[in-house]
Length: 111
Image (cartoon, rainbow, N blue to C red):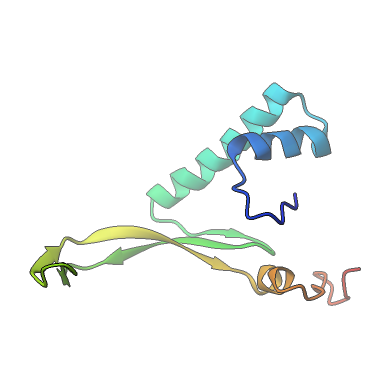
């Protein structure tokens, strides 16, 4: 799915792509996308890392309490500890984003 316009890809767009490319019905495509997203979300809620080959990894990190500063007033404010989700793209995804030809899993160049 290439947008090239800076457009935001939505769940509806993902469901339509599955419908067009996989051949499932629209209802099945929607259910499939929702199932995949729910599985990723459930794993992240449990603190597990989700690795998608040739795409990247989603991880949950713990941030400790720290002192922040209100930029307008300069007043120090405590920021409570929390968990944050981070995404680390794979080397293959980075290459594709930068327009380089990515290598296939067997070491040969993709065309």
